[in-house]
Length: 462
Image (cartoon, rainbow, N blue to C red; front, side, top):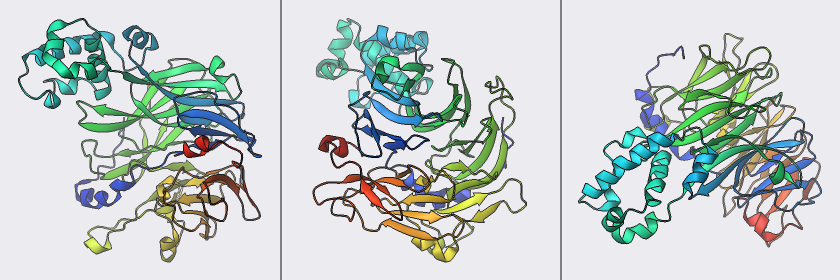
């Protein structure tokens, strides 16, 4: 499918190690609707809504891990995870990666191997471990735990009480109205045994990009994959790419996805990443049954959290490491900076900030968020600092300029082009001495919208 740049990533392994620690971190627990009227809040897995005055709803849904607003600001897509300990319910849920016959056959093989195993059960590993993902093996273990099998119970012994409590996590993408009765009207569109990392709606609201993470084999390696769903047709989907970073984006015409994939899929140590453009929908918006060859645009040092954002003028905005090899150990960059990529020009890559200003950029540039008017980005830091960068000038404005003992609670987001929404730490200029607060920040005015929210809601945003 891919026309590869064929660049070796072997020489980048040591360099990539400097960025592996950034491949995890805070999630986006606040999401504003396109019209800026309401914010969706994920707190301790519960979904709430609030307006700009802080009028908080009761919990609408539980088990929520990701949320994305539709362009009409009336509906939301939700990624919900729940644990299932009933085989019939698991079959009924019908995750796309759940092959009942295959999993039962693997469970039978695992049973025979367990009965013949003489070692420490904590070290047990099936001989065909690579046949299923770890999530599928969990389903096989659930099947075994539900059987009335005296021989297996005797073999497992005291550990059976843990085995008997086996549950399988299922993640489901649902579409629902942003209203008090959301749970009653939720429509499931896709279920998987894998963890859903990101939801990204197309500008026309008719397709949804979903990044999910699975464990290959017996917890041997993690793979992130990019899938596209048709919003109005349950089960209609297409796998776009494996070994991708977490944050893709749609082209302005809602037909193509821009994302970063790992050039060397067998490497778990960073290496080379390819910025690719893949057309996934036809002229009338239907998902393509067979994807054309993707267009490779540029190479970057791969990181699991790299983000692509499409600008209105055709350029792409991204955070990446500026790499020049060979390099001395002391010369290896230890942080990311912002770049624009213009596929229509000979000079593809341009820095947003001059090199002299890189030191002003906080250390989680990979988690940047673009303002609706595409004039600014907010960049957080691992220790809770927050800054705003003006794209036209490269000017960096500090919003939170002191470290927070709790680190970065959630990724800052834009309510609109003028107002930024974030969690301000206690004892800062924007919060009381007692607790953190959710604030709306602008150059002219800042206000806390969470003053009357329960402590449990604030504490759960992390």
